[in-house]
Image (cartoon, rainbow, N blue to C red; front, side, top):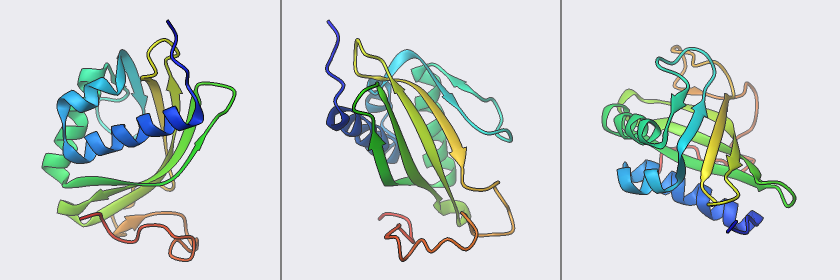
Amino acid sequence: MPVELTPVAMEEQIRRYFAACNAADYDALISCFTPDAVHYFPPGLPDIPWRTADVIARKWIWCVETLGSQWSIEKILCSSTTPEAVIEWTHWKRKIGTALRGDEWYIFDTATGRIREIRAYYASPADPSVSICELFDFDYAARGYHLKAPN
């Protein structure tokens, strides 16, 4: 029986996913995805796209353990007519002192309410010469964005 994918339900699932990422919780991460989920990324990362819930979970756990990754959700918009949402996030890489801002497009499975697909888009290329990759001359502070990694 299909689940009702309201904007509130989709937002709750995205927030559960980010909490699981930040906690590096394998079981919680797996529970957010369909088994055959796919996470797409811009060019430049190894082994992309990430295919299956297991791979996605293991890759994010590696990021937390190796890079000190933590994520902040900045904005969420959920469709009222289709099983889709878009978010804006910041990926803090604490162990290397950098951060990356970007967006992701989510597609949800209507039978389970789980995430079936994520398409990531970065605000700018990952530039090793800056401490935080973000849009040039955009006033993040004035717009209420996080300016440092969560505790």
